[in-house]
Length: 173
Image (cartoon, rainbow, N blue to C red; front, side, top):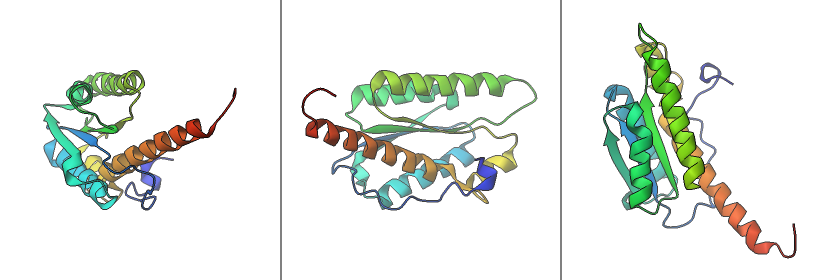
């Protein structure tokens, strides 16, 4: 379902299986900062509302969306995190530059997530214009920062559930 058909800020409710002391990194691109800082603020507010302690949210800035995977890797290398959320905005321009950046960022984030075994969340807007970006950063379609925070929490919850199932199993599966 496309975001034009739903509000990105619809919350799944409080997630009870997120462990105490859960630590989450938030990497935000400074390019298109009006948009990305709105995503970051909504993301962090959602994490706080869901019970993540402020001191367990590590927020850093990178120059642009292309640097999001590198920033996430640095955080994962330095801190014991349960997830990293990458927030950016790549607005289509007159050239195909946006396609190259978006492709590189999405592949980099996915590869890092798989290699690290930690959820690395893609919270990057790829709109056609500034208006579409604003609609998804607190406008009529909600805020993708909220969606990214909820995605991270759901993935952390999934990891907890899988670890619990692993402890309960005996024999061969």
